[in-house]
Amino acid sequence: MPMDELAERLQKLRESKRPLRSRRVTSELIGLSKNALQRYERGEAVPSADALVQIADYYCVSTDYLLGRTNY
Image (cartoon, rainbow, N blue to C red; front, side, top):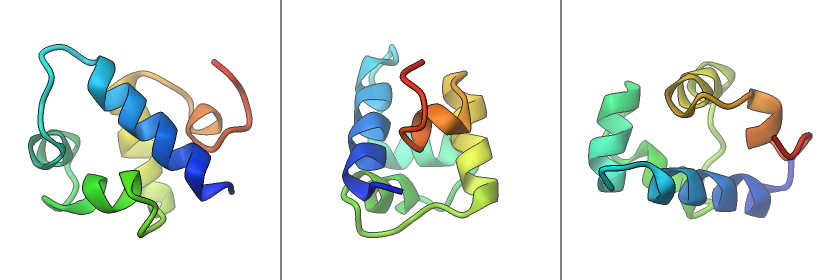
């Protein structure tokens, strides 16, 4: 999985959601630890399969989109 693409897509999704929320607040709304999204957006960590599903559900996108396998 290209980490840069995942990180970029996560950041774009978070920034496009209104109201704009911090990484910490968004992480907590998704059900992740408070700094998880920050680490994923920076490319410092890879989300587990469960975390990836939680993120995809929150943003109403597919895990394939998050992983760069599709463009929608």
